[in-house]
Image 1: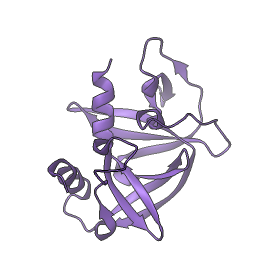
Image 2: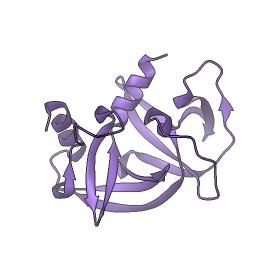
Image 3: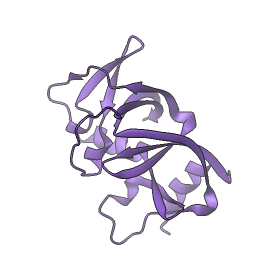
Amino acid sequence: MNSAALKHNEEFWENREEIEVLIFDIAGETFALGAVMVQEILDMVPETPVPGSQPFVGSVINFRGKVIPLADIRLAFGMEPTRITIDSRIIVIAIDIDGEDTLVGIRTDKVNEVTTLAKANSEPPPSVGMRWRPDYIECLVKRGTDFIIVPNLTAIFSTNRERR
């Protein structure tokens, strides 16, 4: 395990053996976010494109009277865009970006459940054979025969913010 992956994994688990997460799907992959980050789950709402912005955060939405960015993390992972369906949702999260608490909407294909994941079932992303940047993945958690991807949103948003 490289030291950067170990640091991210330790930060995610914060000395706990289990963590409550929200499980959701993006482009056929299963992802999880710490439930404490989640502010609300929205049906799809009208979005306003922002000219000149990065495609990753190419629009904004109105969330309780505030304008917040709407991110499509599938683009950060190099996945193909998918069509909005009846199951599509926006997860509004609070995240620290460069020392500032920021509300961000994340477009998903489907929100599945809130559950608990065990640290014992987690491992860092492999250093070989991954199609995604390893620093974008906090860890992989095995559940049954499947793996759940825990994205490193701090790395994703910081990197994509620098590209502007």
